[in-house]
Length: 309
Image (cartoon, rainbow, N blue to C red):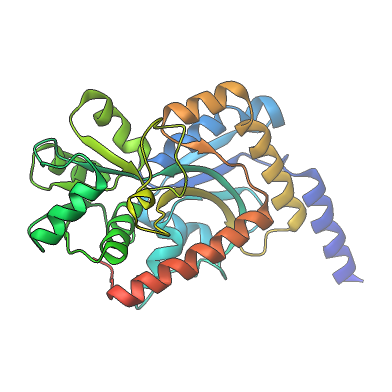
């Protein structure tokens, strides 16, 4: 009888969700893609559901906090590639991307952009390949931390193209971009959201978009794959998660809340201005994407012997 009463209470809470308290959105550092998108969405939620959403920047420990939170739907995590890649590169991972989290939505996606310092004498991916092959190990690329999308995109390029552009690690994409602007590195694969301001000002030269298909965010820019690197694809997807054990009804409800917010015209405009594209997937679609992402990056990480910095 007690079990039935508890189950009934849980179902009732799921049906009433979200009404009990503000929703806490955990993200990485302030000013990051996950933080900016979370704030765009959080500003919309009170009007649509009558409940506040509070964005809480916790950097690299955000996933660990989210994994240990009560799975009641009031703690959600907005996070990108490192959530599911970092454990693949670490001997003592603090979370499991599959066991510790319930996928809610692939919210937005930002394609990575292959950019070079303007002084580098290349105007296309083929030019870069020719230079890299003529001078193995002479070129270097800047990236954020190990497992970041800028790191993986560059290592995938090395692998598919069979070249050796040497990594220079930075504490984040921002510092790495400063390294590129200063000429300390020649090549980089930042997300569109990070690269666009410097592309528009002419401070970097964009050679190609790393997505599988051309992106409306960078009209006219060819794909890396079109230079003969068949199968090359590297994006910066932003996922939304709840702690494992969250009720399916709560997950579905928050997915719908997010979809409604992301499909508002001016929200789409704001997201696009940040260099991302709205996806707003279902939980099942995101779960499938997550499995695919883990499988393909796991293969690269093992082949290259990539480890945490």
